[in-house]
Image (cartoon, rainbow, N blue to C red):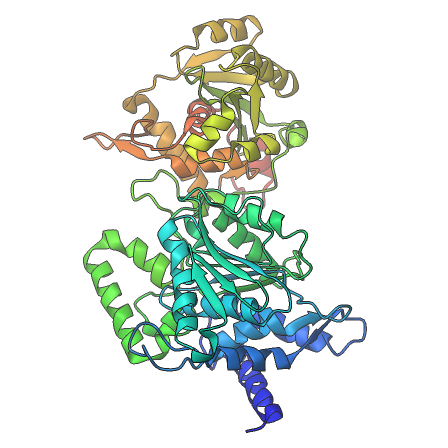
Length: 573
């Protein structure tokens, strides 16, 4: 087969793979179909002279020939030469073949791949790494990052294992002190991890690989790599992951954004990001083996892979506590982490009506009955005011928190929480000094009361009596909310039920979302519940403040707007 025939065969395989997904020959999830739809849309637009990109199929031929030099290092194919699957060719075609007409540089500067475990992601990433390092005319800096040292070493070790077994490459690189150096162009490959306190700060990566991003508690590694790429003319950030067990991590927020980019009915666009999400759809039966290929484009195509999935499912069905891991790792479905967690965060996200802004609050709460709840922490900790507004059977919810300015960076490091981003959002306010100055808390409540007329303020009497007296003197009615399980059980259950039934509206307040995701339930023998600070490993103060407010708002006598009810189409006497 000559050069042109080989190139045409690869091109045909990629387009047939996408066509088979589009027409249902290959069963695929909604987001995978959106990806293919985007691919065909791009191919069609290339025909236009005004479209800024073109496809260089020669690049796919080069990538395929490069990968064909290497051997499988693990599994039943260990020792055999790698023959890329159609799925892997499709990824490579999108990553490397789409180029800018103006300068022939890659179109995509960022790649997000979410796929079930054991689908050869380390193998594919290792090929990408060595391809860029060895075949570039430039001195490339390539960093493989992950939250843990062990995870970041996986792709590095896979890369090293692959190139060591190719005779023609043995004299073309050196490996010393956990760094691979390509001799002819000076390119380097290194592994970094947050655990090892190596984030790549101060580096200038041309290719950054972020493996299992869902494990990252902050976006530090990703942000550092992207910032360092500014000076590079042809940078590439590749993020690859399975779904996770925590909806508060940065990866889940990015996943939501990438979903919007793929969604043809959403206005979000970004021509510089390639996105591949292989997952089961909502409502799919995990016991139906025909669905498994949606999340497993390699594993579900051969019998040994199917047997492994069957085994994992069998264990998950027999031990329900392991089903969450099966759903995330094997079926690539995001699942809230805590088995005893208070809130289903996916249902919370469905209640979002718009992004939070302090400037909008007066307008957004006009005509609503407003209640606040105060959760005063130790003076060195997070202090929160929860707000619940009521109108016509609906609740609008947000919070405002306070933290001492002098120790917030120390807390950010210790708690592994991006309080700086909370501050930028306007949902967290820093008070001068090293303790929370309750004068700022009081003034914020009074300013809010001036605009929104607080009907009642629910409070935990611990450390709050002086503040309550000053609020009373300013005309705000205060009601003590005893912080015991018998008193908090009803508002705790009712608030969650209001969320699940769609009666709550919120403004995507990141601090409240974080706190609700942290909240773990405490239950007594009578099945009373409350969110417990001792059983919740992370901060829950903003959620506690909201529940204190809801404890009063739930009894508001205007919860049902009678005028609106009488004027509705289904009203009868």
